[in-house]
Image (cartoon, rainbow, N blue to C red; front, side, top):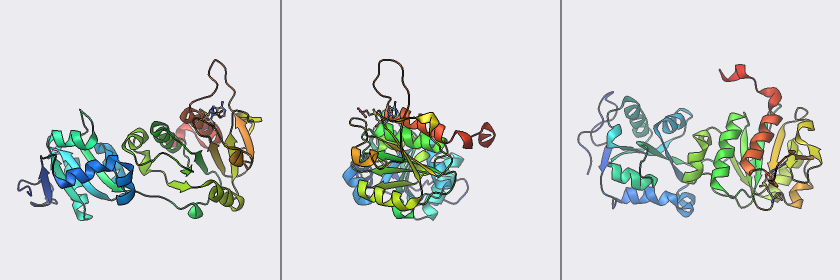
Length: 288
Ligand code: SAM
């Protein structure tokens, strides 16, 4: 039932606006737990993200919370009350849950004290236009959730403007991926597209598509990243870039390697490329 000792403090969250839940059989808890399945995320177009800082960052960036979930231990914390008030004001629901329910929702033994359910956001490729000094990452059929999360986080840190997912890709809104982004999923636009759509867009976008390839003709440090806005195009973990994409790139770049390994991990290679492509644009003064 509805909690009658609801969050107090700034007075914005009133009695009846916080629902107390201790049962794993609660239907709302079941709905939220179902967000661990891609099918449910696709149908509801929502996703779950954990952590107080992350939820606060998201709300500050204008993301709307469908549900705010916090464990009893977080009750009364001013930051939690503030975000609870904001959630209610925007028509969302606030759940105060037992540790057991929190662990079940986040599928973790030592769960975070706060989690949120947000609406997914996708940007349409036709609305992507790059200005001078902008860089995007395009990923061909990325498979690994950890790689994708790490790439979104790294792209954000390198000052890239967004990430495109070409073809059949792992879901950026999966819990593991969202975790790996460390909140950057809320900062960067994501685009879902296909090979033909991407190639058609490229023709009119005025961008420099720098594809990475193990057979790349050019040392990645000799590519001109200043002439036009850059799209760094990365290949699938197992099979690399297919010919239909590689052949349409403006250049094929390779990172020279030493040692035994045949290739770099996709997320590492993306990081190396991005920081080279944006080397002239990043200074320590910018990140004080
Ligand atoms: N077996 C795959 C192949 O032959 O392409 C290996 C793919 S690698 C694990 C995944 C992606 O990371 C590649 O498609 C490429 O985009 C990038 N990559 C990894 N090492 C690279 C390197 N030394 N130079 C350029 N790109 C690299």
